[in-house]
Length: 131
Image 1 (cartoon, rainbow, N blue to C red):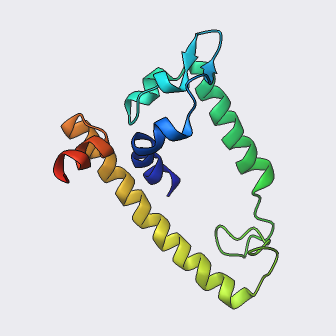
Image 2 (cartoon, one colour; image 1 turned 30 degrees about the vertical axis):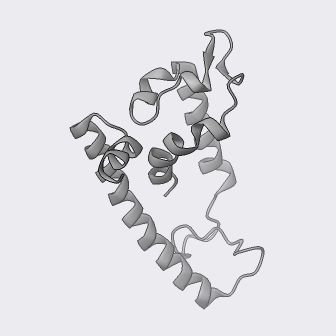
């Protein structure tokens, strides 16, 4: 779901959310505003930056979000919402979240195919269609 939003929103809110004096890498003199939106950002981020991202995601996946009971539904980490946990309601909410996640995955693939096919980011594509 975050990937789907991450493909579309940076084009619209980049100037208001990212100050021009914030560096992505001081040693390479690379600022956040120098990184293009869409798939072109993959090549703009240094290798060390991708390593940090992968290590951070791996740490959260291996040590923070650990499913304690193997019989629980996937994604059920036993914490509930705001500490409240009602088993039946929680399971139906997890099912709904999994379905929404699947729809978001399809939307992300469509966004990637659209950018590869047209060469335009999601925001550029839609701004050319919708006046």
